[in-house]
Length: 154
Image (cartoon, rainbow, N blue to C red; front, top):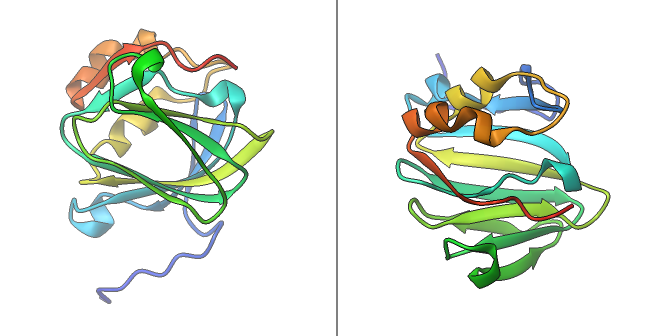
């Protein structure tokens, strides 16, 4: 077995998360727990609530579109706000509150979690017509995620 993994866009398995179809680029199992990488296209209504992770760092690579990030506080009103354009890399270490929202009609994003166990949460939620993160507070808690504020308004 090779220690390298090369996966071109579209080669990873897909799963549904709310309204999104997410490509699992690399799984937690494939990296012995080191990382999970997902590719997805998001629109303005796909913004998660402001939240923090206690167990993993989270990164994003913006492949297309522009994405606004709120980071560093427990309230959207007091977060630092920064925009990321195609090619940008964004890093949010564990325990740092954050959220994001596309500011173009859509954006394609790689989401990277280190370590990668939280992919189990995303795969457990399944398909739904609209985001309902508050319906999954207990499940989020099992993965060390705490919701802090509403999502940015669409």
